[in-house]
Length: 105
Image 1 (cartoon, rainbow, N blue to C red):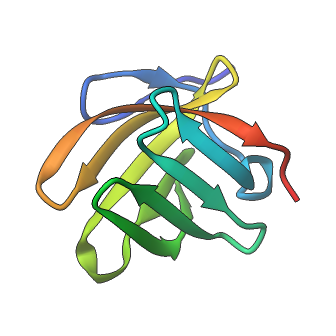
Image 2 (cartoon, rainbow, N blue to C red):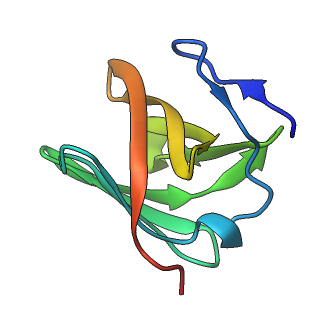
């Protein structure tokens, strides 16, 4: 198993090998942030003040979800069956852990 460090807190994560393995619905434990990733890589992130969309990328094992119009991104990897990493939303940054709430399509 190869681990890599994610920026924003030094969390260690396992690499994501394909968009298909993470396709589906995800949610933060608090329910504040939800994420829907489709098989084609398009995604929607919803949080209290907005919904952001974009196309997911895999960069060196990290799942990178850049929002359109440079309004932020999520950078995630596998950690104990959940996706964990960091977020930048507008000018706010922090750690993030989201868990699957529905099977991939």
